[in-house]
Length: 473
Image (cartoon, rainbow, N blue to C red; front, side, top):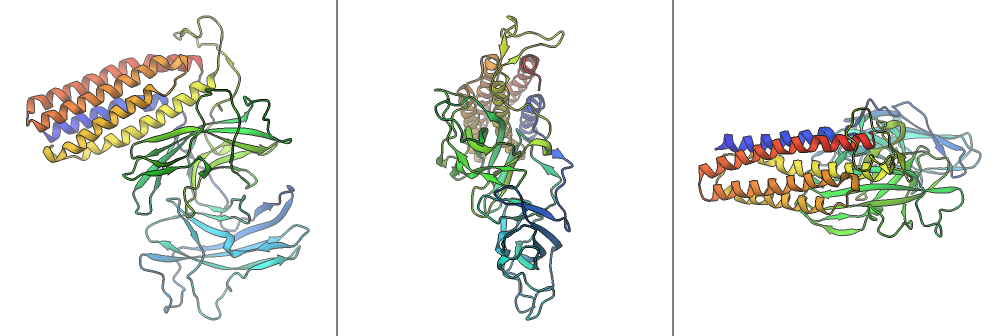
């Protein structure tokens, strides 16, 4: 019967892959991205917009074995050595603080310096704090970090102020694009959740005219979803999402007045997001005119730094959700929807946002179903997993039903609701067969799953193509 259950999982993955390949318009990482390397001076700007300093990582050794043998790293950790030079290229004294430099590993965990002792007279010397580095002067020295064994250093970052995030070294080759579900781990090393940035409206102009942005600034609206894919409650705080610009300045979330019943709704803080649940909405920022947002970063804890989405030139080209309507010109031979037969206009922004959030929800659901493929021959002991999978599918159907699709996407939304509902029933039927020790019922459940897959693929393709004809990706 293990073969039958594996077939169920295979059919699920086949039919979900057909939808993901259609809707994941920007769900692949931007490949080939490069950042500053060791030896590259990185410019630091002041609030007035002029250069005040440069910071350079001149050496990075991982692992570093030149420590005093009487002061080894903690068990399970190793030392990383970083040599840094900070030069005052401005006209005023500059604070050079080694505590402003940190490491980020490939799992998004931050490391502050400390713990490395190289003897009484090390070469190069340790980096010493200088509160007033004179114009034209420079400060150099070594920093030591204790890093968990088995992880890779992804970035060296510099945070001279609370609103600054400057990358000095970036070893990453792929950055998540808009629509990518980015996993983040708990301290125990297992996935706690996923963050998805579905869209960015820059500028956002559909605000209440009685509450405009400050002079010289404009609003940016980010649509995001946090999904709890772990086993414990998760805090979902929109205040943990920041907008990073090309000058290294971080923008915190703010409030913006929109029309009543605007969709998606504002992202509401949830102190305890339940396992398998998700929080979705928009987060607003007030951004200085003329600056270029390059990333949305997620800081769910003081020791975390996760790039949720790369923007601009660092991400794959993508139409940005925007206010205003787009004139519809369907491709030749395309099946026109009711919204286009009149020759009117359609606002593509809600369609793009709904598709991205729908795909992110779908991806999370697939991850939950993937666990079925690891199940051995089902026994009554496996019933909780099967019942939970059926309940997850039912929950997904309810979320999709309440996703407030644009009028042009209502038919596709109905197909997805029916898909989740049918999968829930099929999995429950399979669980009943396992509980009754009825091989015939289990085989019927497998056949039902095959029919679900065929119907889904038949129904979803023309409806998705219709949306593409309305608003090409």
